[in-house]
Length: 270
Image (cartoon, rainbow, N blue to C red; front, side, top):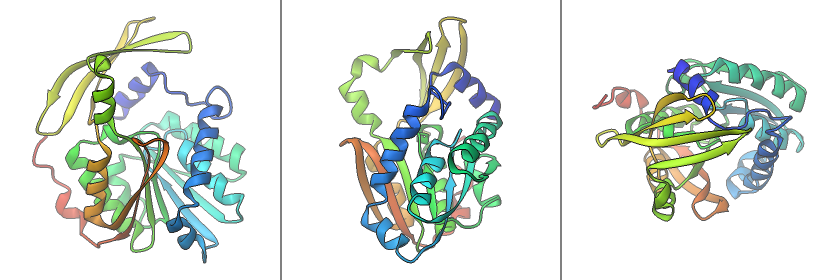
């Protein structure tokens, strides 16, 4: 799976240079978290805290975790950052950017996010930033949020950036089957291949038209209500902070219900 992701991100046009071409993306994340930590849950949580442990899942080069850490460091908190991803190339960049931007070393975990509890037992803030949820099918997400509820406990906060992809499909129906993107002098063509109704997965192909390199990938096109309701099963409270529009923002959850995640480890459909 890690090789598939490495190949996918080589073909995709997602910027990963936080201090160069991707600096705009980092600055946007910094503005997002400067706003999100003003939410009353964060204000209450941070009131008596001096040290904060951030767990950034599917973090890639660290856009989310490093930007949130920068916001908190500038407010006087001692921050520890753990960034998880399946791509070693991204995590190596994250270490460099963490040192350059934050002035201290971050920690990395090269592993599937679904196995994060094997490496991390607790966190104050668990973060999934960068619209990563399509990599998880319906059953994966149930297990992942169950695991995070255990890691965060009764006080920690889960923050997930997400977009309502059902609304996007409805409002941009002409882009459902084929979509052409342009980035860094490259055209990337993506197209629908098949659908698995039992897992809710769309298979799409991505083709770099300059080289004709292609990669196939499965995606779960989540809507906000589905993610919020899944989080609500495992957390006592959920909320949503819009950041760009009514269908794009940060999902928040807090107050673990204490449900054992192990009962959700084995999926009914492969």
